[in-house]
View (cartoon, rainbow, N blue to C red):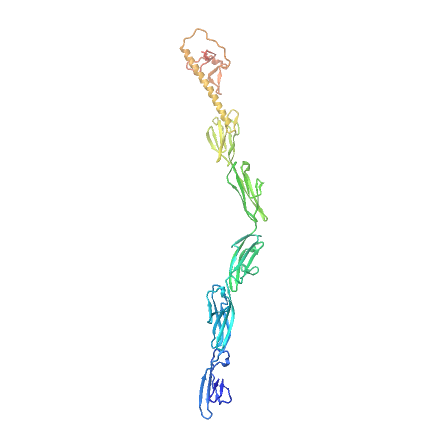
Length: 519
């Protein structure tokens, strides 16, 4: 408001009073400022002139206006405070002169500045904040609620990866910790949402797993603009028919009288069922079968049959029951006929299969179960032995080859042949002993007779003992037997000279039971 010297007032070129003298405001220079009403904003100039005297007076003024605070507001940066984070509270208001401020939290002044910063936010800092703006014309205020949240922490109660069987069910629970309000939880599979979102916790459930359920699942917890997430990988053991079926023996080497466990194994889902068979006879409907004392009859082919609802599979293996050789036999194909072929064959029962050696009169002929003589000779006669041997022991049998029309075969481990040979040897020795004793006695008798003078008396006649037979010791037939003197009468007339090895004997005996010489 400008008053001229004439008493008239002008504002922005307009006369304020008719009673004042003419006052012309030639120029108004605008100046922007913080005012609430633009019509009062600016600078003012006044020019005063007298009517009769040329006189000009110029004045410039900048009036200042007082305006009470208005449009007051309070803001938070960030809008939502996070526990252990920071937040800045700012007051703003329009007023002239510039207002002073007071920030109130839940009725308690926390700052007298335009801004207030909290560096370590806790839940206690949440609540109503009020900004009061004041100047000499008055005051104004505004309030806002500060929300303090905590970043959600996702937990899942399932391991990763989780492996389930096809057609089985599973459930994984996702929880979002971090205070109030609860976080909203959502499951995603391979980037796409699966199921509905929920607060606090959310369950991922599959009632019958198929191959389509295999993949990576993610649970996301979201509270305002804060998120957390966890992922799990779901794997499925899909159903399939049995395969890679196997059957095993424990131990692998089984001896007669020992135990053996037979075990079936197969890969399949659902878990296969089993049958164990021996030579196509079912022994067990389980995965294992035990033989407490193995016999030779337990050897053979065992089969493991595995099956489930999708199919079946099988595997087989041969069980060998080990035993030392027994029931060994040696056979000669035909009688010993000179210059004819003869085959000698060994056989024995034993596991592992025995190896064979054939000997003749103690001399090894060859290794093997068969020996052939293309043209048999006298030298081939005698005792043949078959020796059967494996890692558990040995067994043997004997047979005797003769040229008298009979081939002796012994399968009783050679016992009878040995006894027969012993008897023959003893009898032969006994006979030879008697023969040599007799010859020695005769020679001694002759020596004594040559030294004594002849007696005139008649020799004592004794009865002929029919037990004894006159033998011609000087002759043998082709069968190595001595000929009887009664057979060859001509021989009785032949006188023995002093150098003859054999002496003809009389049927009569002297008192010393010695036969007298016929000479």
